[in-house]
Amino acid sequence: MPTKVLYQTEATATGGRDGRARTADGSLNVWLGLPKELGGNGFGNNPEELFAAGYAACFLSAMKNVARSGEHPRIPEHATVTAKVGVGPKDERRFGLAITLSIQLPGIERHAAEALVADAHEVCPYSNAVRGNVDVALEII
Image (cartoon, rainbow, N blue to C red):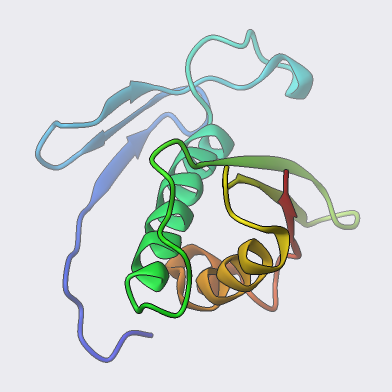
C-alpha cells in the first residue's frame, strides 16, 4: 500500500464481461464483451485489454521516471511497451493472468536497456501490484 495516495479514480462496471464500464467523470466509457475465445461474440473490449493498455502505459512512464534519475540513458521518443495479457485457469476453481511486457528501446545498448527495465519493474505500480502473484516476463526486443 502507498504511504500517501497521490491520485485516485473510480470506474463502475455493469453487466460484468458483457456490459459497460465507465469512469466517474465519463472520460472512459466502454462497452465490454466476452472474447470469442471465451465463448462470447468478441464485441467490445474486455478487462484483459484494459489491463494491458494500462500496464503498458504505466511501465513506459516508469522507465521515463527511472531514466530521469541520471543513472540510465534517456528514453528514446519512439520507445514502446507492449503488454500481452492472457487469462486462463490456475486450477478447477481459480483463474489467473499471464503477462509479458515487450519493450523496444531503439538506440539503447542491451546491457543499459536491461538495467533500465529492471529498475522500472521495481518502481512501476502495476509491477508492484502483481509481484508475487503473477509472473511477468520482460523481453527487450
